[in-house]
Amino acid sequence: MFALDHSLLLLLGAASGLLWANVGLESYGRLVEAVHFAVNDIGMAFFFALAAKEVVEATAPGGGLHSPRRAGMPMLAAIGGMAGPALIFVGLAVAAARRDLLAGWAIPCATDIAFSYLVARLIFGAKHPAIPFLLLLAIADDAIGLAILAVFYPSGTLRLMEFAVLLGLAVGLAAWLRSRVRRSFWPYLLLPGVVSWFAFFRGGLHPALALVPIIPFIPHARRDPGWFVEGHGRDPLTRFEHWWKIPVQVVLLFFGLINAGVPVSSIGAGTWIVLSSILVGKPVGILGFTALGTAFGLHRPPGTSWRDVIVVGFAAAIGFTVALFFATAAFPVGPLLAEAKMGALLSLVAAVLALGAASVLGVGRIRRD
Image (tube, rainbow, N blue to C red; front, top):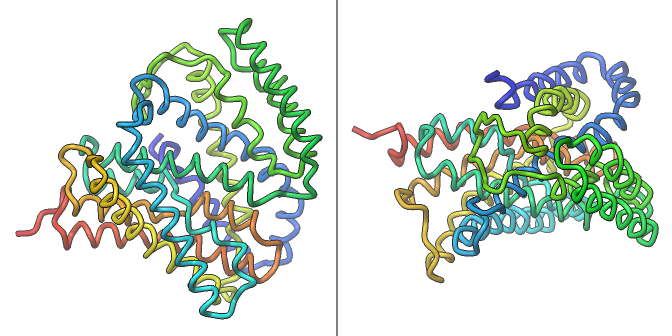
């Protein structure tokens, strides 16, 4: 279960795709063409649905983002962790006279929750207050990222009227079901979920976001059960997570397989711009906006030092899954996409930097003599 809990199947898929693309690019290309739509446009809808589920629970009574007082600092840190990389990316692209890369400004904004959590837990341990701080800012990052994907990266010709009509129908169905179906999540997926998918698909927005507006209507527990709790709740939203947890990991295996396959020779200016933006922008943005929040009267989580915040910033710089997804949304198949994907893949280097920063600063389980 460790591999499933920490998305290691995604890492396996990415490594396999990278290897396949470098030893048999033609056969790899046929595979991508055959399953790309099924994985990226249908399967990933359930990945983003699980991300939306975390947002719903975090904003429930007792959740970490429920009140402005509790949400203020991680939200501000998340904004800084997105603004910093985006500004650095744009600045580097303009300085390098690579305006063709500007469409990828959102790629370095991403934080991969699973891998960042794994690295942070290795450094701090399970009960350190830096862990929920990282998770809250990562979830806020995901929520903002979903909005960015919907607004700035349409998947085709925009048909906003058709989108609005179909999405309105989907939301109306979901609201109607909420007053009548309290025990199963399946009607929400099979009725409003399907209508919402067609709304995004026909409206020109990315259909992987289709379940995001439906998830809040699925009945859920009154309080947030906590982070990565293996609960046995009987509410439909908890059962939705339990049912789809393993299938989504299989989806991520294929997502890594078909999206990470890039010839190593594709490394170029776009790679280094993406990588530099995320490795520098994330920790600087998170630290800077946390300091800004402190100046305005917000507080760091009790027991979390400024050195801890720096290490959290490096851990949050692992973009990987969402960064790969943003890259495929930002660029068509070709050299620009390949360069950007390599930058997203290499963001795993942030794990080494986080461990190094923890060692130098003496935080978490790592103490200087």
